[in-house]
Image 1: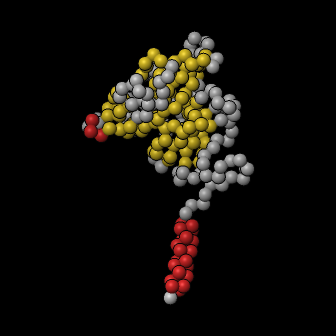
Image 2: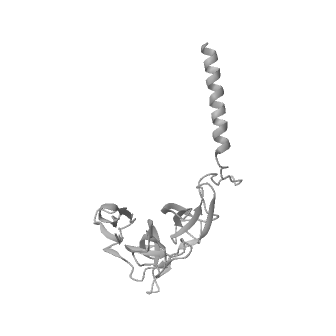
Length: 214
């Protein structure tokens, strides 16, 4: 009797497993020896930590630290990829590129941060008439020939689902006059109807970011 029950249980598990496998989407696979089969990687060059993971209008957005110019750390920018199922990814053009500063000597790299969907464009960052505004909040890292000069928090925004971006004209938006101040993380705080912004730095304090009309 015990042997019969064990055999029946094994058979049931096999049937259940087959059913689950039949219903699951085909995984994204790779034929390249050193490329992960499931985890996203860009077609080429350096990739580091993910930033600004948001879902909007049927797409998962992945932004990530990226060097568009080589396969080592440097020229930090935000790469961008989208997916409808978190298995199959479409790599898009670089979202936020490192840029040269007016002094002609230093550059501003786009370090880690977060992204939010400003439903209704209540921040007014995107042009009038924009339904929803995608906002990136990142650490702007000022660098001159490998020497860190400053770090502060800055904004960029997109009115076309992250395909093109504009830097906020009044960047930086938060400054502590230090070169160790990074990784802002914005989230929606429902009780006060605003976005709280606590950059991950012990010297910082939370401040209001977005105010949604009630």
